[in-house]
Amino acid sequence: METNIENYKFISFKETGMECVFSTAEGKLNFKIDGEQGIFNIEKLKKWFNVDSVGYLEQIHSDKIYKYDGSTYIGDALITNNKNIAIGVFTADCVPVLLYDLEKHSIAAVHSGWKGTLADIVPKTIDALKNTYNSKPENITAYIGPHNKVCCYEVGENLISNFKKHNLYSNIEISKGKNLDLEACIKAQLLSKGVQKTNIHTLDMCTFCNTDYKLHSYRKAANESGRMFSFIILR
Image 1 (cartoon, rainbow, N blue to C red):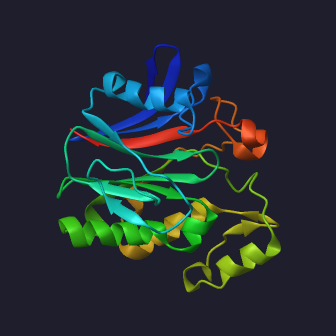
Image 2: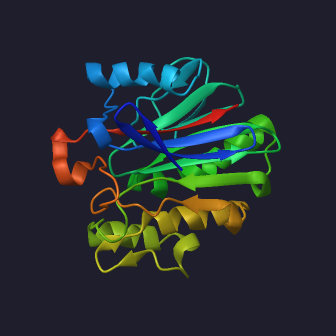
């Protein structure tokens, strides 16, 4: 569902007790947190989406996961079971993954670039939900947001080789030529942890070549690129 706020466009999904949202670059909306505009827009989210606070991380392409407590940690995934708190991740080609456990009413926001994907940050976040909130994978719904998809994500042959060494990917197609399919890897990770195939949703939207929405892409704009913010809220 498209949500229009001021001159900005967000793509949102709602389930019982949960809302997840993916920002776009429409209206030049930018959440790059090392600039005043990014911080200003993060604060605006409180009013736009009626939340008490917004949790985010200083992202480093790691497998570090934190329980949200109001602090800004160095890592790449946040979990919480607090209501009316938006937790999210910044992206401009990497894969944002939002997780929701309907039964235990807990959520997670994950930043999974190639380094995080290779380090299994999504499966480790599911483990964190299990260990912290007693979540069961079969009750978890996953939403995969806009990212640099296999159509445009060219990488080195050595990187593809490193991925293919992982037993999880031995029988699935995770590349086309020199292009890596991070989404296929993440879907395989989700399934391997017990998330149901019918509970995995993707926007199927490439940050580099999509024409339906303006999206930030570091590969396209390099240091001039802004950042999108993908977040999830318990209601």
